[in-house]
View 1 (cartoon, rainbow, N blue to C red):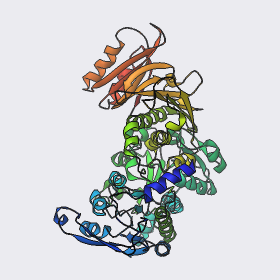
View 2: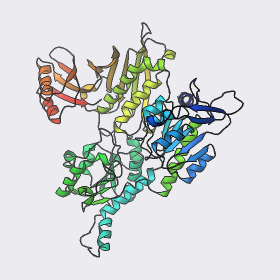
View 3: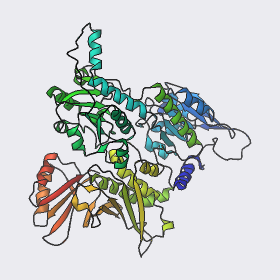
View 4: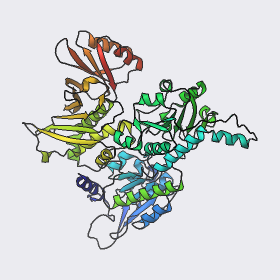
Length: 602
């Protein structure tokens, strides 16, 4: 499979097309350099300003470094390419310069917009983001213009973990407050009595690269460490001496909480009034992850109420925070200006990592840190498009049903088709299922290039099975089935007779539909979001649930009921266009005939 992925990556980077410009990668029999006039510019002010662009057959590729990069990374680039270090470019200057470049390296300060890709006239093949986040790069435009985007996700790991431990210890011993007090001419030893770390319970929320490194260091300080992460493998956690627990157990038992989760719709403001109320009185919180995972107003209230004794924060919802921020000014809060990755070693590591990724991509090698998809023939995309959407949504639905702290490890995907195996390439479908399983609780962007790498990195084993059907091979697939083994389910009815969470879907009239949940047949369009209810099959159930949703002006797009037998148990699947309130969901759960229910976001 690696060989297949490598092949597709090389095709994506280096395959010439009739409309592409002559660059160092094109194998064209021209004896000398070709001068070409480009009429494409950046913005309306440049549309009619021609530029002279020169491409040479035997020239090195050109890499534009638009923001400061460590010397080690620059030297690595210079061994392979011509390097143009031009900092603080305006958007217009970047657009003008980009048509002369095969690769672009940026940090977070440079916006790589659609106009930049259009201005490159097809020459730009790689964009490297020196860091993790790629919010400043238009991924859709990059893919449309045949440009690979890579990042540097690992080099900052140790620096971020060390900063987390630094904040943890400084908070516990009131280092920042005591320092400010002495510099103000005071000597307040009694006021700044701290707490010991030995024997205390630290909950690591997110057991990825940074979280696991924090756990190792905390163990060295004599702390008892627990963790919550739906994808962490229990054996990997045990090897570090860490117990994996549920989210509620982690926040309820911890003396200290260290946040290392990505900012996703599922984690946005996950530490809110409701969850602060579940915590042990006097808990202390460290955040070196993303500011948005904490409801900052709720944290201020929890600090004032004594629920949270102290907080140490390196990240904020808005950066920089306002000067009059109640959170920043709170006497029990220690703050730093997003310094997690700010060590000399980390900066050099990021420079080397991104330089290696860019050089490898320009050589046509497989990029494990790619964050956008390779080019796929238009006719293949057209045929598979609804099934690609179905695959991702089945993955998203299935992972939201997983409960407990055991983590997702074994996933089985079944494809039913009348086509021979050689006529159906399922790599893109498997990649989209991986995307659906991983992205809802991760900041990783999954695609055909990095799907297998991402799954392996998270200990996620995906096996595929094909069912050959009789009939016409006109349609590529009859149905796709996703099963997750060895996990508990938030919705018991989703468990099949063989013990796995099972979701099955089909494409009807070009629209993905959910057609089976566990052993229950349903039929609901995968648009908006879904409410699943297990109920006693009796008259009036559809009306009761529909009335509750209608009172809140939540539009029901589809409703389907699958049952074992009349007057026995049934599963009702309801498609909704808007998200119901917690109160409405609570009222649905309180209907006497409903035995369990779950709300799933798509």
